[in-house]
Image (cartoon, rainbow, N blue to C red; front, side, top):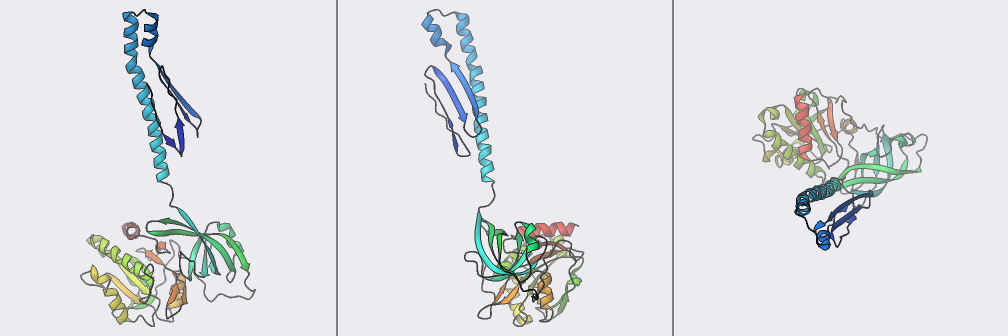
Length: 361
């Protein structure tokens, strides 16, 4: 009789042996050096060879079969359950990591981030100014505004795209001049930060200010209507449309929240332009397109302060385009930041979960 069993643990096979006189299975788990030996010798063979078979001996042999079978099945199931559990561990591993090389100029730093005005990163993103988390925050003391650096961007990739970008292997290729002064000091939004009462003009040519939404959970993102990159402003607006639709399914929650899309191109994004743009998104789900969702722009004078506070880097591009970073923020009923999403990798349901938590506080 023969038996062949194969099980893989972290890519290593279990080795098996089969005995001729019965089942002699020897499993050796090569990674952990664990061995399990199950011996089942057919007593009948030896008994018949002796030519003396007693009813008591034969009865004993027959009765012991179920015991061996039960022991064998328990061991068999235990081994394969372990393999299945190991397989689950492998399937729950982190998202695959990718790396990209980046060159740029340090704009600002804080304890855990560096805001970088960087060149195009092929396969990842176009040139823009945006904050990056430092893989090793201990290096932040060596970085100063104006320093030119090269670095490696580490990102995880899933079906939705890239997530959690971090900088590592930072090399300062040119230090800033001693008299260098950055054009802007960017603030990295932190949970608990009090949001200033910025004013802006909305799609109805009415002045609104952030303080008027105290008592509600305000969700704000930054866009400009001429943005040609589908994964940037259009994606933010589509995500907000989905958030608006999800919130509309709960009347009580809907009344406790408000959405705000802020343009950083006020010279072009006039109230009329914002209304036309907004209707393409807010009008899909709301009975009154702008009852729950405003599209607004600060004045040219106040724009730098708004952009700096929310960590939005903006630099002129070609053909009237703007190179920019992304910033989406959830502001609690108390006017303080509850969460900040600095990339385009977040999903509407993630933000809705934060909104629900903030609304319940």
